[in-house]
Image (cartoon, rainbow, N blue to C red; front, side, top):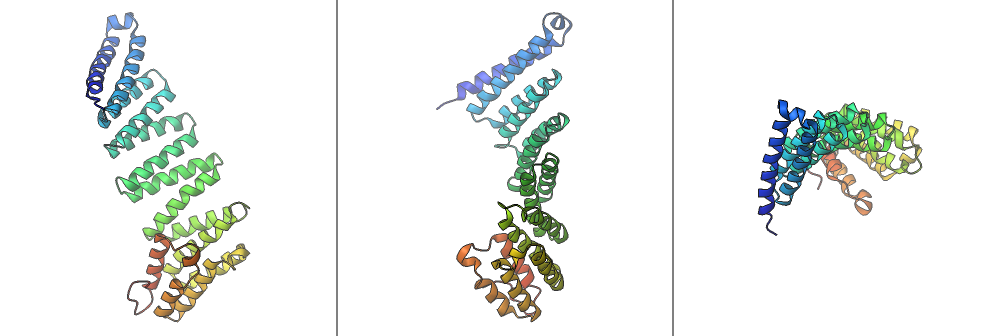
Length: 297
């Protein structure tokens, strides 16, 4: 479907809206319905933005929504301003990720000012995801996941907070920030092990914490495994714990073959395969064995 006509109409609407905004600020405009003209201009910007969306001109749509957001803010319509900034961010996501982040941050500032921390957290996650997938800036993604987790905790949304923290933990370990990753996995593991619906996830988090300990120091890992068994007895019988003990024995003996065999013959392959993160951590541990050739095959 040809939407070029919509784009022309949108451009005209933008020009008309700009004119209304300018005349509303003049002396005569102020006397003859200044605020009303500004509200009309705001509606016109939103209509133009939606027409630009139909024409798939995402930058123009984003700019039009931004204009509407700024006017809403002038009129003290905070909620509408935040909504328009979100609409702008969603449009820019398809064309200009950096601009999308600016708009989403503007919305987050408004929501936090209004005390709407849960919705602010949700948009921090969106920003983190843009940094992850579009801009590949993991440090900034971590910062936004941490902020989202902080807001969720403040609102007692602990499950949502934990999801964000687990993203932080995974990235922290990848960046070799093992102490930070361990702290997060232990914290989330401790909070889930007493929950009847979530307790079986705790063994996975303690397993991941143990792998981080293992990369730093074998003795630390042994002590950590003992601590987790004491804290959460179900961990002792888990395939994760059994694998860790085999790996610890192989590492203590500096036996590369036994280490590789423990990984390749473990029960994970028959139930749920080791994921990319776990494989990366295991390779890092294996590299601390003398004579290692650098793979798990």
